[in-house]
Image (cartoon, rainbow over all chains, first blue to last red; front, top):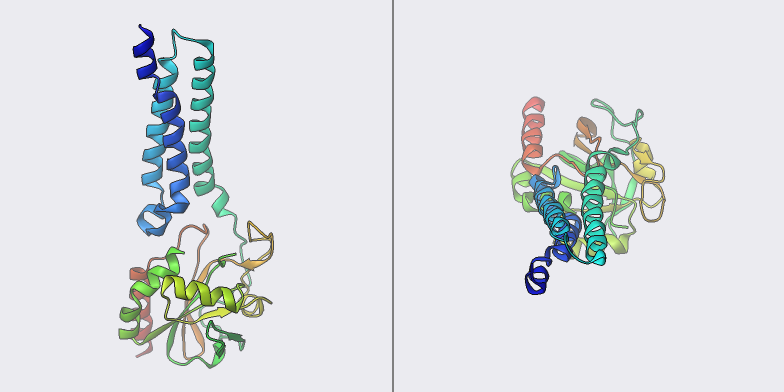
Length: 142
Length: 115
């Protein structure tokens, strides 16, 4: 293999981890906005799979070649696999970290009287709300 | 946040069923004003920094904020009608919430059961 073709082929060494990083960050930056791609992160897992595959092919093509390319290729593959593992861990293990809430209000319970201020400064007492209401408790924007 | 935005997208459908939407979090009033403006939310975002409503509903998640480590509400949804809880959903994964379309069906069912 000539030096030129080696250089031309080895773009996978950096492209692989870059694609993986894109596949990782874009879950929060983009895809989590759509429930179909948020509940199960299909789009991100596909991008991460491409990143891992590109990193693996890049590493294989580092032979024969300079030692630093092999080290860079190994590091790139480790980064790609690590990011894929982190996303899977976040989605299917860490985000189940919620309390049981055994004392949560149940069907048939009366709505407790608590008055809170809305974004326009108006006070709203939950027990005084008439008619039908969807009440959403969310974690906030921090 | 996709959940609040998703509800806003269907707000006319909820109103057509005779239902309002109210959201509660620990965020301060100023933050809620920013968020409501940025996402174009027309329904009330109630500020509960002392976790008064969150505790009254039994939803406190100790240390649940990943950044500040403070206490927040666990994600939860209720359908209320005339001062009584008629339906609830406590997700076991904070990324996964019922979708607005599914909630509309619940709202219709609760209204039908009340007749």
